[in-house]
Length: 148
Image (cartoon, rainbow, N blue to C red; front, side, top):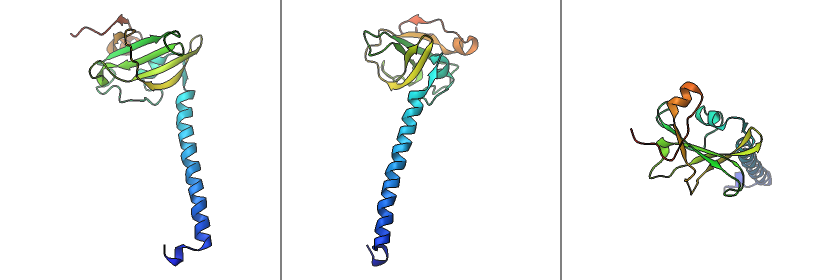
């Protein structure tokens, strides 16, 4: 370090700047996680399809109108809470992909938990997205959709 930058004032400013940077990073991370944790909805599917919160993965690569929506109902005995997990087919590889998970907090209200993996997809149900986009409803069918 050259002598112009090594005085007591410079060292004090640098120490203070490091503290400010750490505080800024901490606040930013806390804000990001608070946003995800605090998002509540009465309709997780609508929130997922219409991007009402920051999605945790690259869903809807080909848009929302021509894909297959995926759902798993999460019962408490098999998971640590009652809830719902949603995904869509365009991001799935060999029967694996991310899920957007919502925890039920009261009758009719869900809170967004985050993006997760679900190891057992025996709970899987599917629905064509164009049905949901045009009617606001899905006719859920057990299992993977048949290829057409």
